[in-house]
Image 1 (cartoon, rainbow, N blue to C red):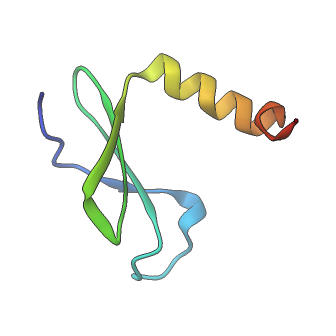
Image 2: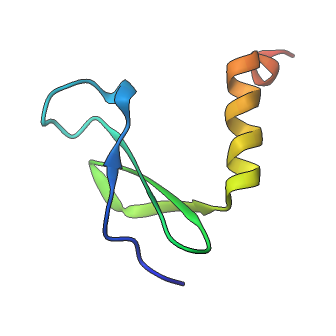
Image 3: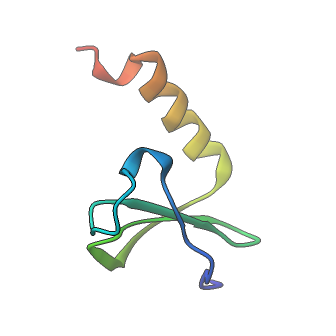
Length: 65
């Protein structure tokens, strides 16, 4: 698996330089997510499942019991 080298900070993470941000990077085969205060721990997925997760969060479908 290719290791990404161009991490981008989420626009929802605030404007400071602190370690309270979600960062995202992509490679040819995957999308990588990490928390800036624990960069060695990564979630790796592909675009389709990540898109479904984001859609579920935005629609509120994941918060219903």
